[in-house]
Length: 229
Ligand SMILES: C[S@@+](CC[C@H](N)C(=O)[O-])C[C@H]1O[C@@H](n2cnc3c(N)ncnc32)[C@H](O)[C@@H]1O
Image 1 (cartoon, rainbow, N blue to C red):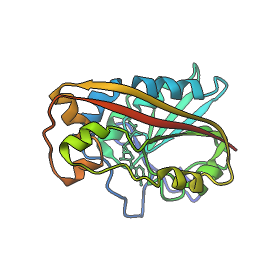
Image 2: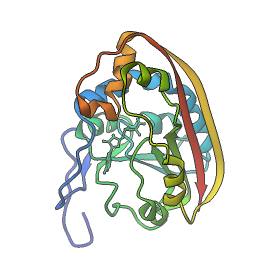
Image 3: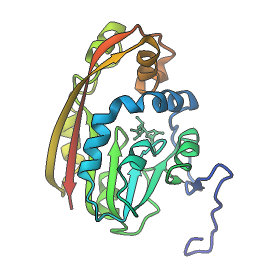
Image 4: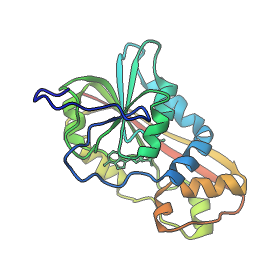
């Protein structure tokens, strides 16, 4: 229940809807969520780096645009609580089986107290700098694709490129934080046709219609930064 007496129910599927009163952006579709769940284990180097970046003393970790809670559930220290904030109901239904799950637009004011989260995670998802600064106590851990992420696969299919100004925009969004760690991970993905198609189907290209990808060998390239408050 909020300070003004409004009450919020836990949906049958296990998440809490705190997006009341505003038009919510489109989150990932059921098909995108299903494709992402299938291929997330191929991103183990990323999950491991995120886990190393989370201090074991953290008690509440919030993942903004956290999708199905896959990464968050793998990086939670023993005894810590995890909460995913997302607008995708299909993603939240899965997240609720792993961690706390909240339907909320992360571009808006987050339903969290000032300094309420020890750690904020943000993995391939929208970033609201002022709200991250308000709610985090210790650090924000951000994962973004590097320009050559999935380059070979994208070239084969003639698909959208990663925005080259991403690094500059990240620095602007995180102004006021101290950049405490900056890691660039790179590994090779050997994908069969199903996995290659799923990797495309889980990303921004999915909004432009279905794509069938051939079996491919491609580079995964991800930047993981830690920003201290
Ligand atoms: C590329 S996915 C990444 C999901 C997750 N972080 C992962 O790595 O598995 C981006 C996520 O951001 C969510 N999203 C997009 N816009 C959002 C918004 N305004 N508020 C909350 N979540 C949003 C999508 O629904 C989706 O789950």
